[in-house]
Image (tube, rainbow over the protein chains, first blue to last red):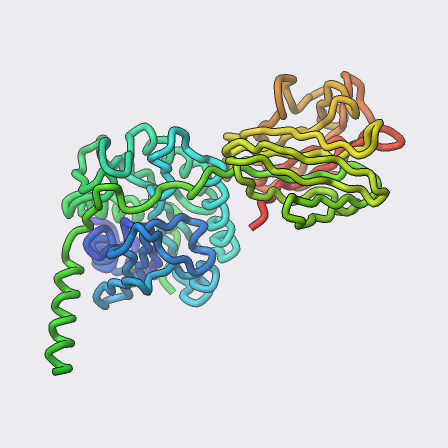
Amino acid sequence: MLPQVLAGLSILVIGDSHMASPNNLLNPLHEALTKQGAVVHSIGVCGTNPGDWLKPTAPQSGCQGYEGAERIGDGRAKVLGSAAQTQAIGPLLAKEKPDVLLVVMGDTMGAYDRPAFPRAWAWQSVSALTKAVTEAKVTCVWVGPGWGEEGGQFGKTYARAEQVSKFLADTVSPPCTYINSLAFSKPGAWVTLDGQHYGRSGYQKWTESIVGALANVEAVKKLRPR
Amino acid sequence: MPTLSRRIVSVACAVGASLPLLASASGLYRTGPAEDVGYVRFVNLTTQPVSVTNAGGQALELLTDKPVSDFLAAPTAQPIRGSATAKSGSAAKLDLKVGSEAFVTVLLRGGQEGLEAVALSETPQDFNALRASLALYADARDCKNANVVLPGTEVRLFTPGEGVPRRQVNPVSLSVQLECDGKQVGEATAPVALRAGGRYSLVVRPGSSGPSVLVVEDAIAP
């Protein structure tokens, strides 16, 4: 049983398509954090990058039908549909003052269909969000993408997954603590629907790993619930 | 009947919400930038204001007290054309090809035949939130074999080589002394507190009493 590190903490979770549907990561993670005693607000918008959370941004057009989802506290998850958009992170953090900001992003930056990973473009997006996090002085934890499966529709490869993860490890910390999802499993171990998004079992395993890792983050352990 | 309709809609939504995410045959959405992009900025190394105008007539003013522009996102599919014009009327044509992920710095300097545009390009890979990144921009006519040393030492920050030299340093307070062809030139710069994750350019600018170094924190226009 995990120590009750997360009990009483308020956690704002923002993410990309992995969080944009209740039956992706959103429900399992939200419920697992809640079970640990945290008060959770989860928001996911499909096809968004870190920089898209500086101002309200709609999901990409290719996300039709899976645009976004939100879940607040003990309430049920709400599928946002055409109303889905990110919320500007500065005002959101100022309004909610969460103990922890948990970011689940990385796959949408992977440029899986391109021969080279666009580091400068990704840096601009990541640093825009981390700058806002620094200004808000909030404890931040960033969960990077998992391995997925090669040969899927997005063109994700294990080599690129490693590149993206290493890039995020180098660029989000500080101010965020980086959680390397690649350490949770072997390449291809979690079955996906499309090379990138997992099935129920994969999201459950990812949830368990994230919650375990989060409870071991030093910056989180030092927090006291308000 | 409104009540029955609402019930049917809410059941349909509940069923829809419980289905796993299904991808289309062509993939759901883009993972990466919509198009290849590079970045370009302009540095006014003259003693008068310079106006940079693109082919569409939009102008960017570079004043002598704020001589460095932000990096502007630039298309890579076609060249950027325009002109740079000093207050005196001297002008230079601009015809730049910006590569994907490249950062192009256009030095606008006075030459023998008036205003000149010298484009220096780099494709940095060293993005890191813990350290600061430094690059040295110099035209050899202003400072041959340019380098910088830590004041009072012979510790050279850059290794000579092709292209724009760049390196990571710890985010400390930094002062540098310009060196041209192995000889120290001018005064050391005032200390600058480098930021973790910050990216900086040391730009050599010509002057009537010799070249000097301008320390600039790089920024990309929002």
